[in-house]
Length: 165
Image 1 (cartoon, rainbow, N blue to C red):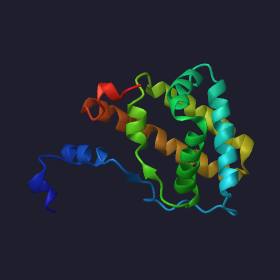
Image 2: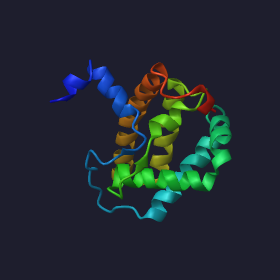
Image 3: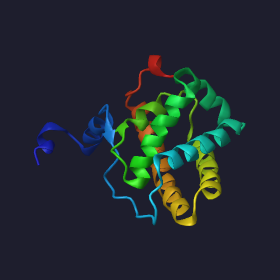
Image 4: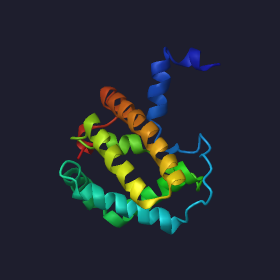
């Protein structure tokens, strides 16, 4: 109610929300699956997916450049936490994927389409059908939302050039 007196437009509200340093991914309850995967199963999937990404001629070099500095094991842990929270009702994920992705200088919408293609292929190879359907549905919703958020973050200069890699 009081936001209309503080902000001039909904865009200002959205900009403020996007600039929050932490985002909790628990807004929507995941669709139930017959058997919730263990953390080890999710981690195995994450590692299989990133093996496929690293082998990809388009995405591999970007991920190697960006993730290698932090370390693949740390990235696998973060992504295991993320997918447990987003898809399997695990503990809330705390982080800001939009800012992390906006900091990647050469990331573009076409690469999200490629990411989604690899993601779907890996899901089909690693999971039973109902888990595959759940993960693909989540990935298809997240990819365009992330592209829009990255565009807005860059447009509004929420990411400093010095922070880009």
